[in-house]
Length: 58
Length: 145
Image (cartoon, rainbow over all chains, first blue to last red; front, side):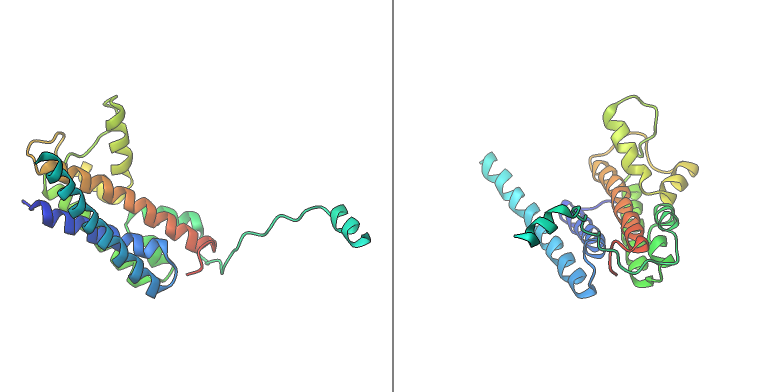
């Protein structure tokens, strides 16, 4: 099995966000919101860090 | 004045910890079941949707890690980083035991993408611990629902 870097990020973020959402909030609506928040932070943080690394290199 | 004196004379009461409805399932059983099979603790507490989502997430993450030829840590290597990796892997419970029994996974990283696999396996184990502790909190009443 092979994954691109980005698909690995998406899968990691998705599964981790689901677990964080369920375990860190009590209300189902808040679980979905917190899970979505974590997912956006994971993916957004990775993309931001990638651009920082690109900027350092160039 | 006298009211203040009376108030200061009384021993300070510790604020009671918020305890919600306790479950019929023992917290220790929920914790152990949740560790052994991802989501099983929540299933015992009659939360099937959460149990299914936890199982799918953790099992899929672990399986992807194995499919990416990630390293499966074993005890007794003596390397502190390996011990930490082993602790993380062991958190997955049943999937880790099954992996060791069936001799799946690799003992070392052989291809570049396998390093991602190693991380997927460790994080799946750590997430399973978080899920099992959540089941314990639900069973003990520390978490409301």
